[in-house]
Image (cartoon, rainbow, N blue to C red; front, side, top):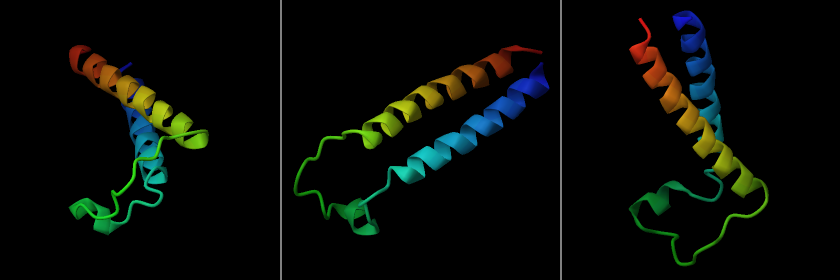
Length: 72
């Protein structure tokens, strides 16, 4: 059981990293220091779906991590 949770956790972590990297569209390194933030843009379509999917996968990752911690 613990091995299965570990494998699922690894797959989820890779999926979360991929989804986060996909969301980096248009956000260059210059925006890290305050540049490029002159306007606010809402997320629509695929961007909104990837953001919501990222939130869900992070929540599942957290719950699986806690379950793995408490299972002996």
